[in-house]
Length: 193
Image (cartoon, rainbow, N blue to C red):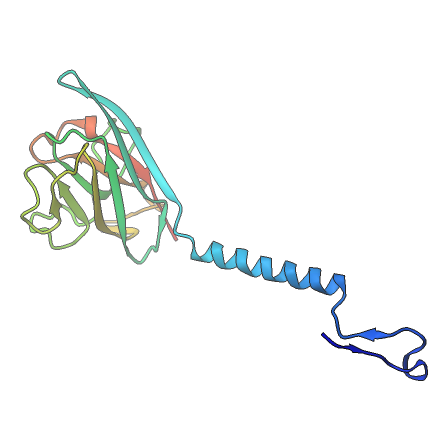
């Protein structure tokens, strides 16, 4: 560190220091803190939405939990959806669907990609103890868990636009082995931006 002295004729009787003032240091520190906070905000992952439900089947209670991002690009995005507490004896479909009313009140439908039996759209995923051999299928993990990727977008087709003409959510629902069973309907709300 160096100190520069200016003559009285140049600057009066007070020395001028090359060391920044306390106020300058404080401002620089505040600016650095604000920049770091802003960087963390933009680097943070999207917030999550969680749907939960407790159901009983055959005398066993299942605490279902479904978690997905709470927002996605309206034009389309691949998202990761996780679940836990599911009955591994009952397969479920994971998809973006139109929802009408509370969980279990009405079958979530229509869903993005329709009935994708070939598993090629990526808009749904079948989780089942029988699954895992076909595209977009996988078996349950320990404790009825899963982590899958699905493709979502606001326009489901047929005039169904999430957040505009219909309400949508990332859902699980019982698979084709018990399609009318509403116990496994769990909704995680999503908004499109």
